[in-house]
Figure 1 (cartoon, rainbow, N blue to C red):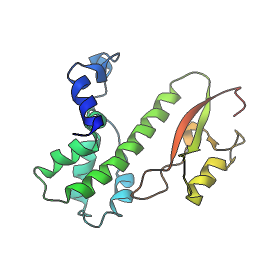
Figure 2 (cartoon, one colour; figure 1 turned 120 degrees about the vertical axis):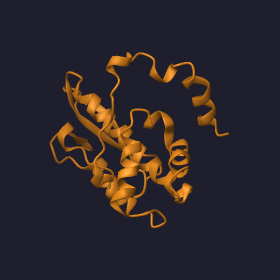
Figure 3 (cartoon, one colour; figure 1 turned 90 degrees about the horizontal axis):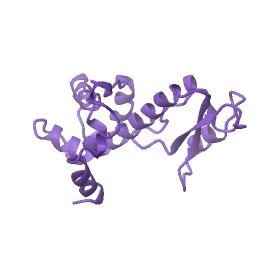
Figure 4 (cartoon, rainbow, N blue to C red; figure 1 turned 180 degrees about the vertical axis):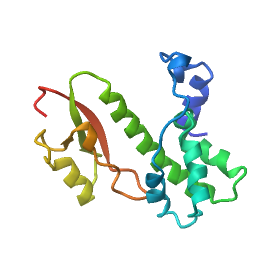
Length: 175
């Protein structure tokens, strides 16, 4: 059992993952752009590339517990009645869940007063020139790597984690 699985098993059963969010405020479902699924799915040649496959993955991702379930358990659930390469599916779900987490973070930032934008910060050791350019660009006059909430770039690395993480930038913080 992996460390993250042990942590989830210990705390999920006690309700810690849902602490602080009353049941009536939890989303009934999450939105996930089908084009983003197809963008990443296209790099996994071991997985079906049809509309039905993309829809099956989207259905998992839009379930409110998909982030809590995680890529490993989500892939295991899907493979139980879908004969596909479980490891390829786990890798794909890992990328898509990271994208979903980032989108939810940005969506939550939009609800906070005084937010100027989102700063992209390259993950340690990142050498992808596209990612590094996104983290250095000042296309909106907000500072290097800062984007208005409506213009935050999506993951540019098909089939891979984005290579950057995001942080909220408050108005008047100098970018």
